[in-house]
Image 1 (cartoon, rainbow, N blue to C red):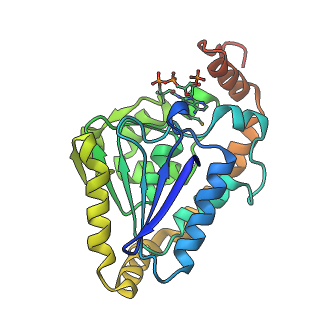
Image 2: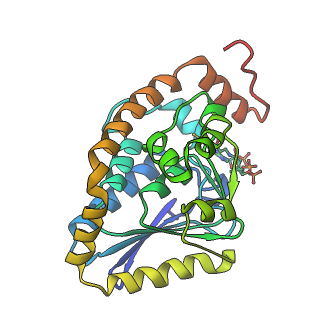
Length: 254
Ligand code: COA
């Protein structure tokens, strides 16, 4: 079975992370599949809303570390950047259902979703500094805007996880429900939205986002340049190798 499942029903495209044995960490092939699915959803009139979901115990552990070590993304047409620019500029509504850990891009992609429903077990984290990296997905711009600077610094400079309640308080999630209900709620809201006039949905989203669409794109480009460079530097290589070897990283020499 595929690591990314896509389904279109009642005007809703559902994209499901389906790699639970690796905590839904995302490989190049998965980014490519999601980027392609977003293009399809953007271009097909029959698709009005997109839902991203994982499983009750895990949303996503972020980038697949082994894959990143082997084939780091270096160019703008890399699958991860195609996905990120695709979701950041996606014109129709996007809804996410998040249960369990949402690490790295598992959290940053939510900044580009319109509605987010969380299971009460959701744990969000942005551990870029712990990995010798820097933020991506325009999170260095959007996290301070959403959380306020000092809470953003706690999340991004300490890399400490925050739970569903904290995410609700700052407005990163719309509602907290039991993990068994999160995907159902996202689906129900998506169907409700899909029954509304599509041109109204698209124009409303465009108007809400247009103030900083260019800023987001610029920030993502600059972050991407730094992120790609830092992936090859000693701190990231130590962090990633330590993860693969199931030990704590030693940053004393980097
Ligand atoms: N990339 C590749 N493999 C990953 C992964 C990732 N990001 N996250 C988890 N896995 C793999 C583990 O290596 C393990 O594989 P194995 O069974 O072959 O040893 C399997 O998924 C289960 O992971 P494990 O860490 O044992 O699960 P857990 O429930 O104890 O913890 C997480 C879950 C998500 C908290 C933890 O896996 C984690 O922190 N992952 C790293 C997340 C990260 O740093 N992502 C950012 C990348 S830029």
